[in-house]
Image 1: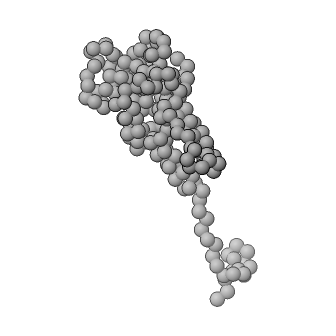
Image 2: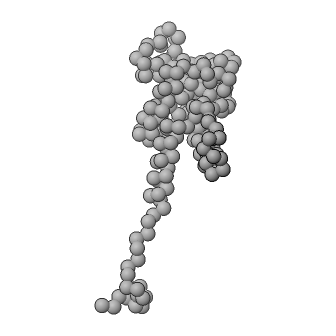
Image 3: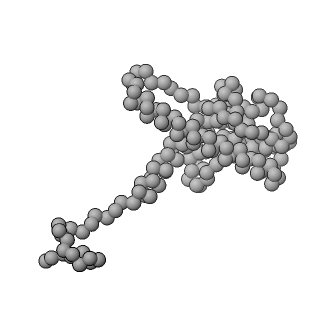
Length: 186
């Protein structure tokens, strides 16, 4: 049986149908998902000041990866409450903040401690239980800043690691800090 091209009417030389084209879009989505998981598990925790990174409570640091994974499963593309608390914690140790940021910090801290550790500190620190629209907007800006910056730093880390793997013997590889400094405009 002679096969012909249905569009041109010409005989097909090898008598085979074209192999289906694998869409790059699917590969791109898979690559993005893998990067998202790496981001959740290995991206550095951002701090306002690296000088205070060693004072961050370990129980908060231990919650970052799980909080990021939960946010990933919910398809949230912003920093988690615990990440914002850690960032603001290191900011409070640098200099006093204005009342708006104090309200955001105390609100987030109380909410995080309540959700993660079942601790109620709302009345002790006189934290607002709800944020105004203005404060929520400021918090959302911080969330986006932390999220974008940590992903940017992870990409840099991955490209450096790839170069190190190619150029450096296994014995001399450097280790990186689990925290990273980034400056948000308060």
